[in-house]
Image (cartoon, rainbow, N blue to C red; front, top):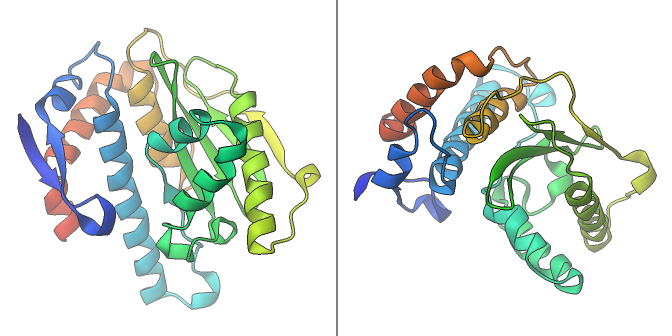
Length: 231
């Protein structure tokens, strides 16, 4: 059943928030990609609104570059095809980032959820201006192979866009000292919490004990997301 619909799809098309997605927000349940992707889409809208506000109240010289929040399909689609086809698929997807006219090197950050073997959620963030890739994993997992794949694709995009790119300048690391989960079901909630703070470069003021309240907050924001979008 459809709980609500939010205008978070392509060109503002409606995306259904389903009952099965909301049901998984109950404590001790693993989040589905519908809830994760919809929440990240809400974070995208918030980031865009903050950037617009910066432009209104400040000068254009200190306005932050846009960030882009991908859905779980992004990494899945790239990993799910042969190496030779990845560059074409990457180009097709990045061309749809209208905030930078398809040039990912004009972004501040790319925020990318990672579904690991359909059993664990993690987050990878590309800091495009700082030339670094970082993984945020609430079980301290390693994502070196995925980050290597992304770096290879960034190099291909740079060549296509005639942008200077030196792989030696990029660093790839697992973010250490971040909150860790104490069960097998809260990884998606940690992902959402990481994503909500990482775009602003803030610390992570939460721990395992906060996951139930964060689940409740995410549920409220999804169900009432249309009110926020229309403001």
